[in-house]
Image (cartoon, rainbow, N blue to C red; front, side):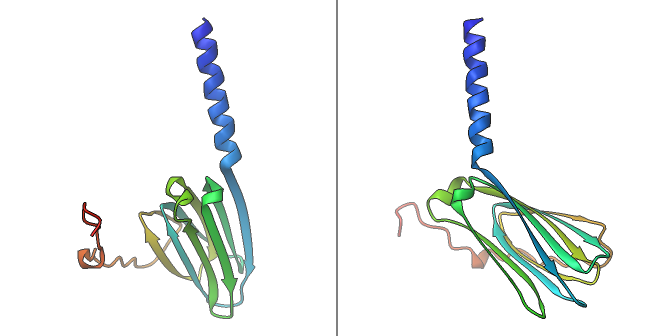
Amino acid sequence: MQKLNTLWQVVNAASEITSLTRHTQTYYFSTLGPITFYLQAENADVRVMRWQQPKVEVTATLQAAFGWRVATDQDDAGVYVVAKRKAVLGRMSTGLFNIVVPEDTYLVLKLNDGRVILEHITGTLQVPPFNAESIYPLLPSGQ
């Protein structure tokens, strides 16, 4: 019984640490007419939905938030979100981006090791072929 209590305490402590390192931030952008939504992220899950409201809503849930830098911008042409993991601390960081955009929005998602869920989407999805020449793996010797 003592071992079970100790194990339960460890699980609870780990859960509390996880919740302390998770950060959720929601960004709102008003729009007029058709726009482009651009997201650049790595090691992230991206969920995109469309709605009839003239605004963009981005909810970023970042695990190990101290390992991320997030920048947003907006102009007449669109809304831009860039989420980069910091060099050392970011290696253990993951992100979840819930994005809701107007129906007439053009989507540009630049992802590195990302996963995408598209909901309520009508249209043609074009995904370019993987280009192995654009990947430069390090040699084991570090050269």
